[in-house]
Length: 201
Image: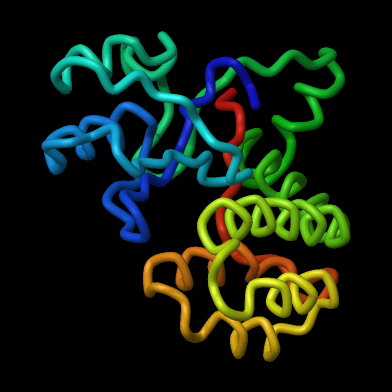
């Protein structure tokens, strides 16, 4: 992840999803909802499902203040509410000249090129989705009925069996696992239609 990129996460208290958003937003929301914030609270990176350690001591302001500086610093340029974050892009003069000649300008062209590359890298997207889903399932559903069967279905690209074996899981856990797994079941070359995060130029 780019060091200036905001960290998006999802927070569970037990088997219930209680917050999602940037790390600072989700942590503050969690603090406001829970009296006992430490017990059974788990924070996951929304993309990779890697756990994020949070020091829950003190009030909401104390907890947020201890997060990484990139989460509490001044707002970045771009359109963050639309999922677009401004970053510096370094190119050779001929690259800038070529981008300037493209319909829609540099930003539109870069978005299109990124989406094209992502579609062509369908295998990579599938593998990342499988790994993220696996991490989340292991942390949140390892003791649930059908866990091993669902895991086998995930790596076998069998969406129907995955849905079958996750059907009895707690609702929030089930729905998040299915959302994470969705790209793993898409056919190569089919994008998900979401806008990528690109550098503003």
